[in-house]
Amino acid sequence: MGTQERKKEHLNLFKMFDLSVADKTNGFEKWDWIPAETAEINYYTIDTSTSFLGYFLSFPFMIAAISGGDEEGDHLNEHLAACAEAEKIPLGIGSMRSYLGNKKGIETLKHLRDLAPHVPLISNIGVAQIIENHFQDLIISLTLDGQFDAIAVHFNKIQEMIQPEGDKNFTGILDALSHFVEKSEVPIIVKQVGHGFSQRDIENLWKVGIRFLDVGGRGGTSWSRAERLRRGGTEEIDPLDGWGISTADCLIHTLEFFPGMYCIAGGGINTGHDLAKAIALGAHLGSSARIIYQAYVKRGVAGIQQVIKNFREVLRQLMFLTGCPTLLAFRNNSSIMRRVYDGF
Image 1 (cartoon, rainbow, N blue to C red):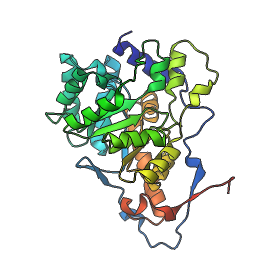
Image 2 (image 1 turned 90 degrees about the vertical axis):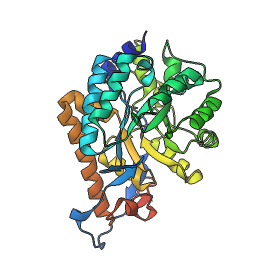
Image 3 (image 1 turned 135 degrees about the vertical axis):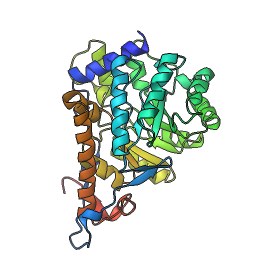
Image 4 (image 1 turned 180 degrees about the vertical axis):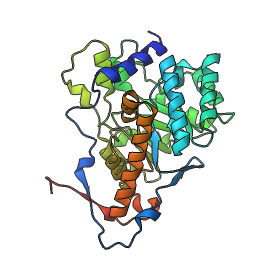
């Protein structure tokens, strides 16, 4: 099966099934807020803005890569690009694999930059693909004219393992990633697709030069569940559906051992409360794909806009309630959160 057909099947799966992890969480329920009732603060002057890759962002949220390469996915990306530009937030594009070497596909990608000239656009390729030098060169060429501001390299070992047509040879990925970092003129963002990275993984990534990490922890979409259902499996829970490490735990151990890592909290950012907790625990950005696509399926562009506005408003509310007038005061602030033990 070709890449475009597979992407189309993935979008259909999101419409047909609940692909979230049924019996595991994103880990943020282990944390609760510490109110700041005596803080002197004006709700109307709270500043949620930040910057990323040299761009102004209205708040620290990114639309994560969803799809692309087929007609439906390309149409979706056009809507996402327009929303990202209007709301001043970054946009990740689905895997470049189906676009590379395809003249029509390259023109489609250039159109996205026309729609979103003032926000970061991030391309995306699987780590198994960059083992081949020609893939590295093709995707790097897309960044030379300012088309993309960073390149995301996604790790999805369990997804590839379950896919009948998946890439199952991951030999040489760290050397390939090291060379990719050296060759690229834009930042390389390593991301997981929903199962997280261990401390050992992050140490290995740091050693090869990775300084931007989307932890992509467990708690959102389970790609092992998605691929099992795509193969005709049952909707019953499989132990591998919840494979991995929660987003909160990934975020905490990354910043504890590698405080210089620019962390994006992806995986299970289902609400504005999830986003706010991720930022308060030290993430620079939060990202989400499934929630955005579900809103698009239900209400189109208006649904996307509503999710984004809701996330931003909830962040503002929690900054107000914890006495933080700016994102700088709110992010990585241990005085506004407490660990919850046994429900207390």
